[in-house]
Image 1 (cartoon, rainbow, N blue to C red):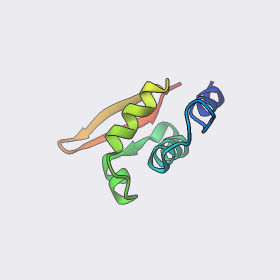
Image 2: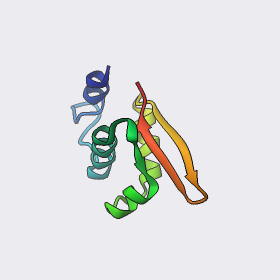
Image 3: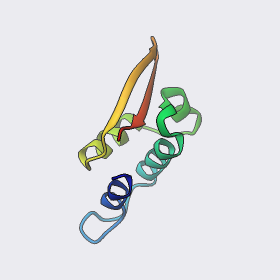
Length: 80
């Protein structure tokens, strides 16, 4: 199933090229696996508007889990 999700958001004639920041967020989530990526991880990797990129991934069919780590941190991961 993970490979199907990857194919669904690859650049193509219908969707057009993928934004570099969208590709970066997706790659970070895939590499982190079940451990997930925190808000701080996105910020340290200079991912601007990562919440917008997470929303875009969800619209493309990627199921993203989240949990609150503390008052200012969230952790995100790809479910499934």
